[in-house]
Each structure stands twice: as C-alpha cells, then as structure tokens.
Length: 598
Image (cartoon, rainbow, N blue to C red; front, side, top):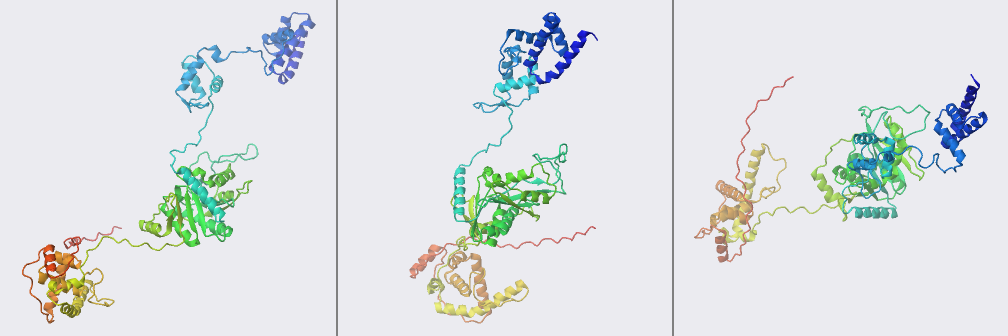
C-alpha cells in the first residue's frame, strides 16, 4: 500500500468515527475543512484534495466542495436549518404544476365532514390516492401526499359516538325532574340509586383492550377469535350505584337479563347494604334507563318491583331517563367505566375471576364496590298477564303527573279497590205496588199474595226436581228459601203469578209483560207455562178474578191509556236486548281412539 493509500485509510477511519456525531451541515463543513487542509499540506489543488476527501468519506465531491465554499464565504448559519433556503430537491407540487388542483378534485368526491369546520377527512387511503394520481399522470409518494393533505386541513379521524338521534321534546324537563327528585330524597336522608345492566362479557381466554406491565416478550396469550364458548358461557353484570355513599354493588348473573334479574339485584343490594346504611328509610328512588330489563315498558320489571316493595315495605319511586340518553345515567361514568378499567388486559377465565375483578374496583375519589354472583335461572320471555297489569295499575302503581310512563311510585301495599264498573244498564221493572193493582191483575192484592204463598212449596219442589234431573244427584246444601229468586233467576213465585195474571187478564204480549217485570220475553213464556202447570197439578182454590177488559191491549200505548183510565200512572221501562233463540248443540260424532305406535 502506497503513502497516498495509507493516508486515505487513516482519513476513512477518522471520518467513520465522527460521522454519527455530526449533523448534515456540520458534516459538510468538516469535510470542506479537511479538503482545504489536505490541499495546503500536499501542495495540490483543491479539486484533487476534494477527490481524496470524498473518496475517504464516501460522499459526493459536490458535498465536499459545498462545505469548502461555505467556509471560504463565511456564511452565517441559519437557525434550525442544515441547508440554505432553496436548496435540496423541489417538492412534488413544484416539480409538477397542476398536481395540487388535480389532488383536490380527486378528494372532492370522497371528502366528508362539516363544510364549515376547519378539519375534514377522506375515506381513501394514501396508497389509493397515489394510484389515482398516477392514472392522471402525476407521480407522488404517500409521504408527500400526507404532507399536502395536512396542509389542506385533512387529518386522520376516527368515529365519535355523539349523535343522539331525534330528541324528545321533554328531555330537558325530565332531566330537571330527575335532579329535583334526587335532591329531595338526599335532603330527607332517603336512599337514591342509579341502576343499569352492563354489557355481557364472555368467559374464557378472550382478548380484552388495554395493556399491563409484564416481562418483555411474555404477553398474555388469548384466543385469536372471539367465538363464544357454550361451556364457559357469559356473565351479565347488573349494577346498583348508591349516589350519596359513592358505593357500587354489582350482581353478576349467569342467566338471561330479565326484569326479574334486575329487581333481584336491587333486592340483594337492599339486604346486604341498603337496609344497613339506611335503617329508617321508608322509600327508595331508582334512576334507570328507558329500555332493557328495567325499561318503562317492561311489565316484568313493574311486577317484580311490586313484590320487592311488599317484601321490604319501601315505596319505590322510579325515574326513567328519556330514550337515547342512557349515557347520562350516573352509573355509566361513576361505576361501569372503572370496572372496565379493572378488567382491562385481563381475560375473565371464570365467573369468580369476573366477580373478583369487580370487587377490586376502587378509585382515588373513594369508590368501593361489592360484587356477588347470581347463578339463579331467569327464563327469557316470561309474560305478565293483562289482569295482573290491571291490578298493578289500579292498586299498586302511582303515576306521577310529569310523564307518568317515566315517573311512578310502586306502593308497598295495595290501595282500596276502585268502584266496580256498573256495566250495561239492565232492563228496569215497574214497582210491585203498581203491578198488584186490581185493574192490571184482575185480583185483589191480598188474594194475589195468598195465591203466591200457596204456590211457594210446589214451586220450590218443582225447581228441586228439575235441578236433580240436571245434576244427577241431590243438592249438597239445602236452599235457604226454595221460592226466592237467586243466581241468574229473575222471577220469584210472586213474579210468576204476576206474569200469568197480566197475560190472562190484559192479554198482553210476552214482550210488554217482560218489560213490566224486567225480564226477557222467553222468561215470561217459561213463567206462565210453569204457573199454569202448578195450578193444574194442585188443588189450590183460585180466588175470584174480574173479567178482562173488552179490547185487547196490543201496544204499550194501549196499556198506558188503559192504566190512565184506571187512575194508574204507569211508566213502562224499555225492553232489554232480545235473547237469541235457543238451539240445541249437535253432539259431536264419536271418533275411534287412535292406536298407540310404539
């Protein structure tokens, strides 16, 4: 190796040691200084020295010449720059006129965002934008595209859950009502809880968001797919957050999230914590969402709350948040978010692991949490009958004036039963004192009453005979008054005698007679027929009767005129609905019993 080669090797070693510690400008100036020193020491020109230094440093001769020139000119360094202004390669938009306009036109179709806002975003990836620009004759890398997008106000954006949809017109009023109710209950020292169900969690080695400190290269190994495991199942945490005490209570259920499961979580909280923390409380305020297992339309939720109120003696007032506003429920951002943080980067292998993680949830503001496992079975789709709901509405639920469907109180005991519905108005009946008039019956009132008394025993015997034939056995309990009208029978013995006398004396139709006695025409037919049979089969003497009037009374107007002439003020009630003609049902044809196939 010659002397020149030896010096070049020494320079190369020195340059290799210094290069990592120098910036671009310092490295350029240092090489220029070495070139000037080498030319002066060797007595050669600057061009020859530049070639030697460039070969030893592994850079271009232009870099060495630029450093030597800057030293000779004495140029002051520009703060924050390694190159002179205007130096370096031109930007893509400067080298390719029209590139910026074409890029903006390309992004116009895929641009999203508020046109008034300063930040927008595009759905195209940088590589896709580069390919589209190449089709239009422009070469541009993804880094240059990212720079130009930022300059035009674009940025990488994710989705934000901020749209609440259509807002209920009374949303703010309901919020104010809930806040007023919370303040009133807390001022009186009564418990106020926020209740809701957290989303279901899969049990097993499944991925969970978050990071945890572990040895490098030893992450927690979980499944690469989140297919559910039917053996391990899922858990549904239902939380009860005590607002005043800043205490959380979570019931981790392994069955369905139903109204019965939600109310049982409230029951467990009251037994284990609420009754001890508020020993003298007689009422409870529950704030919850408008949907789900504790929704304002859920019948089972109200039915089970009624059972809880009767069991604890508490008047349970419920205030539902308006639809679409569940994120304002205090349990969401005071309890559930901290449970999620405790569970982060930690697979829930078993039910007990999940419960232990909930119980370990604490915050710097003093939150503590109690967790229990509820492995009871809650059938899905359990129905509450309409009769039960009518009872709850009439006797148990006290709807408040402000949106009663959202705000109501479940009473611990039923209210007095409301007055029964009078139902359809039944046909009336003329007073017995008017119908007993001799002008209408042709008999004196005393004689008619004596005849009815004489027929009472045979009348009761006939009725008992008919009942025995229908039942096929004797009556278990003897009737207290065989001749009295009871059950669905509308006419007693006196009514039967009156029906017969009105028809025989005045020759009234069955419809008019039924209107006077307040029964259907078919009942009049049965009554007159039975009375004639009883009189024919007995030896009861008939009292004297007056002859009937000369003209037959065919209409109600004829009857009123006849009664008015006799000095009787007769008000004929309206007839009731006509009974359908009785038809005997046909007996079903006999069917052979199918054979059993084994």
